[in-house]
Length: 313
Image (tube, rainbow, N blue to C red):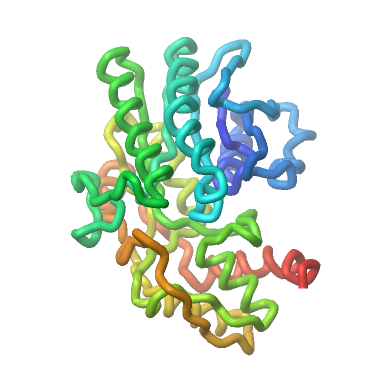
């Protein structure tokens, strides 16, 4: 296949590029490098099946030749990112999705949207099934990301219903692994960086809020299975093993043999109290479930972070 990945220089996008190139497909990456980095894809430039285009997908997308799949993964994806870039976040969710869908329609390609567990907001039920409509504050600080993704899902389904294009909507739950940024702002990179420097690990609130962490290779495998399926409705991909933020922090302290302690700060506005995917659809229809244990995934991620943490010490 010939596959386009928007946001392909980011954490998830670059791993997807690796995955599809490894399967013998051709991959085109489009990224404006707002939060992505050429460091994530530099090893791919010598691959004859790889092409990089620096462009902002909210403006225009032109790719000559055939395309079999358009994967729209462009977007700031951490609370720090969309706090710094609220309008670009809304634009890439709305205008960028529109441009990517238009390209998929023109090329007769499958369209895949990187949606998120954030469409569920601060959920009132746990775990969250795909049938749950969510509990989102549209005008809160997280609304620029939450609502951009909810709008993107609505637009994808409108194109599917009206133009009959095949769509795949992956609702991605908390994912971690190599190529996350030191200053990403999410729990795992924050905790690992702080632990490697023996600094206090910043826990917001009392640390009882939960997250379910999926290692990136498991997520990428699930995305590949979903792309090759015939499921046009949203599908949760994530690890249902639920942990408190405090448990995650203490696990990372143990694995890094750190002298760090826990430092508490006030809980940010609209921070979800629980986050756990119901993956029965993925299990039954894709035959997918996560395989990498938390400790193994964290060990791999810690090894990736060690050189960067040492340079920034």
